[in-house]
Length: 350
Image: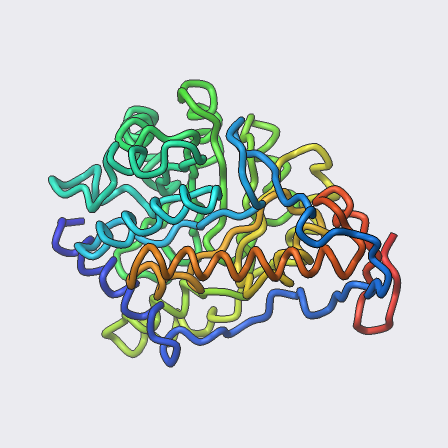
């Protein structure tokens, strides 16, 4: 695909995701089916609640990840600058958007070692699509890591988006083998994520079996990339095909629970429609180690570093209140906090 086409597509993606009327949520995350049992006697010092954790041997002040957003439009440079500064200020992790355009053209869109200079102490995750790993291999992936001094590489799986996208990559034979080879030869750990349709437990298990270090379930309930591609489509038939899959996918909560059942010792990231710190708390209780958010913070990222800091400060405060009102002094305590299902019948979880 030509540079102009790639950049145009990335700009379309940003415009659509930033427009609530065009990027409306077409499915649910599943978090609404769960609620914490309120503790009216927490016996805690609110300010002493410990939200700290770590990822790739780097400390985090809260279990939060700024999830992949954009990597190939001119305004991405400004967005990436704001996100890196905010991640450093907050002590949370940062995953960049796809680096394909930056690697295949002469424009870096802010994806350089300057990013590490802006965020020297937090985990930074590089990002490539499975199709690029399959077609261009380890060398391209290593370049993606080196260009931002990343702690790990995300390989994103987006078969639905590719299937409904005009000119999408539709031959996915050998992807798992390519990921296995990447794990063996890349200088940093490999993370695999979906982009909003969820990872099934069978797929998650297969990825860990070939050496993938971290799984991001990236379930349904947030941005639907099938719907985004439908919005981009010029041909009515292309739009109709894509829009039929607008609500396709495994809800984030269900994908997370299922992944944790088959992968009890694997680091799991929950992303896909996480709205606030209460959703983040639910995700941690249901099995997540880290919680990611992307589309909800995109408008702040376009605005300023301060806007991003304020956005995630609110998320962190909400998460702390959830800990306080469940009697949880730490993330480990939150993971066993009393929780009930809301439907079809109220059942207390172990």
